[in-house]
Every structure is written in C-alpha cells, then in structure tokens.
Image (tube, rainbow, N blue to C red; front, top):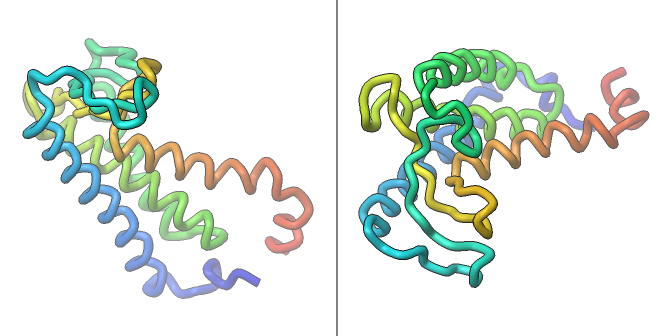
Length: 168
C-alpha cells in the first residue's frame, strides 16, 4: 500500500521540491555547457544522425510554434508553475508526486529561460540543444516534462481497477 497520500504535507514538500530543483539544476547546467561549447559548431553526433548536439534558441512553444508570442508562453508557464505547485503538494501516490515534481521542474526552468534570457525580460528564448534525428530539438527540461507526463498518463490509462481499489 502506498502511504504517500497520507503522509503529512511537511514530509512531502522536501521530496517534491528536491526533484524539481534537481531538474532545474541539471537543465540550467546543461544549457550553460551548450552555450559555452556549441555556438558556431556543426552538429555533434552522439548516436550518429539519430541523436546530435546542436544549439538553437526557441522563442515559441514545442516545435517553435507561436514564435512571435513569447510573452504569452511566459504567462502560461507562470500559471502552470503555480498550478503544479498546488497539485504536487497533494499527490495521490508516490508515482504521481514524482511525475508532478518532474513537470514542476521542467516548467520552472522554462519560465526562468523566458524571464531572464535574451532578447529580454518575459521574451526570452529557451535554449535547446538535443537534436532528435532532425524531428525536434529539445533540452533536459523537455525530457523531464515528457517523463512527468508519461508517469501521469500510464497509471491513468492502464491502472484501471487496481487504481480504483487503491483510492478506495
């Protein structure tokens, strides 16, 4: 039986924020590395053409959608951070707590990029450098966001009766 939902809030807060802070630290450290190593270089193969390091600055959302609306994404991301903090402090399970913490860390680090990177406050571009076979270019925060979303969806889609019994 998972007792994380019955644990007091004070016991969950350090774990939730530790995971989120770890995501932010890893993401910002790897972006620092990318910005100091990759400018002006051809893509660096990691796994052949399938996975390469290539520096890009993304003013929009995923796949650079809405590149002219960076300030809107800044507002949406700030709201998402507040909502995620609220939900991360009340997870129904340990898996959900980790998932929400990953989402929170990814959202915070993207918000930091939008607030403090060029070209200016609330208009900053997200640093992307992990090129997935030319399909898209992302970063560590994107990996955390994807992983968090999968951790939330898989139990919801396939938990079925076991999840309902655990909730009862």
